[in-house]
Amino acid sequence: MKIDDIEELHKNPALRAKIEELGVIKHIKQDDILLREDSYINSIPILLSGALKVTRKDSDGKEFLIYYIKPGESCVMSLLGSMYAEKSHIQAIAEEDSELLIIPISASADWIREFPEWTAYFFRIFQKRFEELLQVVDSVAFQKMDTRILSFLQKKSEINQHKSIQITHQQIADELGTVREVVSRILKQLEREGQILLARNNITLL
Image 1: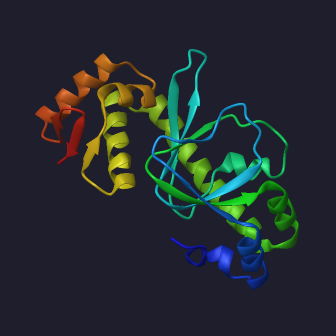
Image 2: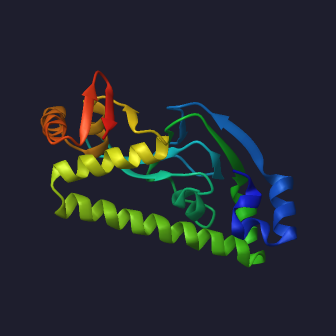
Image 3: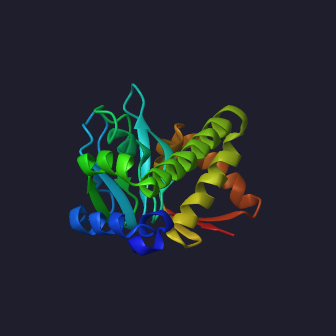
């Protein structure tokens, strides 16, 4: 993906020129940490290729998956950080090798005042993230664990663009905030129902 593919960011030639002038391309490897909890935010990443996962840790240090960032999107915490000098409450990790466009936080604050297109991009991403957070709340509050696990696998498949997912039962448990034994039991149940195929560190959606 290129910036030209993001509707709001190529409408205004002046904004496009600013992005080209100040933006820096960064490549990160799978499992690299882009943003840590309790760290100050000094830049805004716009994902051009790959995928990021955004997680939050509980008091015991266990990670809980909140949402994924896809090409053309950014992190809400980084966008908000361009307005308020606060520490991050989340962690952003590369789900796969990824390419990002890094925007200085000071530039974003100026662009919000100067370019309506940047503000429109800001609020579109904020709305999408808010809707995903509502889905997380709904799944935790109202969905059974088997439904949550299947939904999780479907999202993983969509992000990876492949029906076969390289993942361990423990990783699923960590990201969903449960225990491995529960995940293993439900995965075997889903396999008996013909919804997935299990192999060592691999799950295939059928």
